[in-house]
Length: 299
Image (cartoon, rainbow, N blue to C red; front, side, top):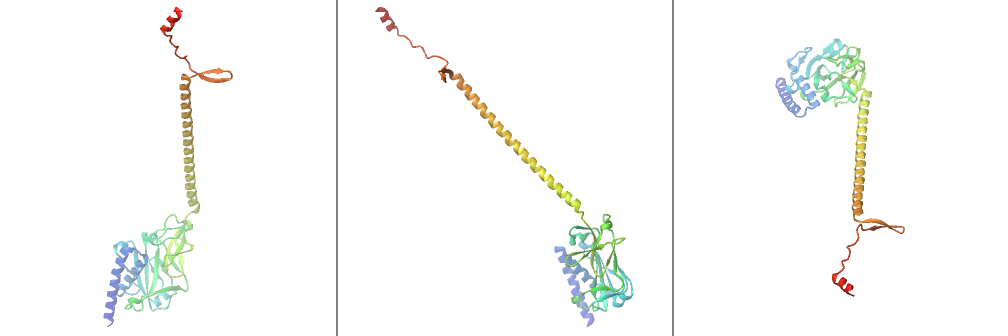
């Protein structure tokens, strides 16, 4: 009965795996990625013993993500120190709510971190890593997997981040991300890029963007825009002035030519106190008819 029930649950989980893998290829949604990692952890859980971490193999399009799972008894978290990935869990940790067995799931998003998480005004200088805890008291009930929280009662949980960017420096701050991607800025990262946390979650390290440089670039762009605008206005003004001067010169030349032509046809004479136009030549002299001259001489 139990084996048959477990077989059906395992088949259901396998079907969920292929469904999530298909949706990941289409949407690349982070919630789907986290659900896929959780399903893989419980899918392979029966094949591994407690206190033995096992790697989870993701689809090829998510091969840059590292995922590891570890099953623990409730007493192990209280009595022993546990290291999983970059998380160092000290003794004295209890689960809330209390469960008999726990599965810790660690993943490192690697170079996909900035694709799913961002912090306004900051730049991530370390990958987003996570350590989540789930109730593993009854692995046959895969359809009702619930997340539990870890509460350190003595010393806090420590994270040592890998491959931190050289630009981090003393301004690097620890970041915690909620499931919907909302970021919570924490304290400064300690020596060796260590962050101290009080429970499970998704974490990274980021540095603030230098506001002075950002504002300087903005002002420089604004100044260049004003310079180009004023240069355009000046060029347009010079062009309009040149066009106006050309038109005035053309009109003056036309008027001078017209006056010159009129001066060749009519001369000016003064009559009394008035200047009047006068023809440069006299009219044609009237011809005297010969008959009239003869008659006159005869008389």
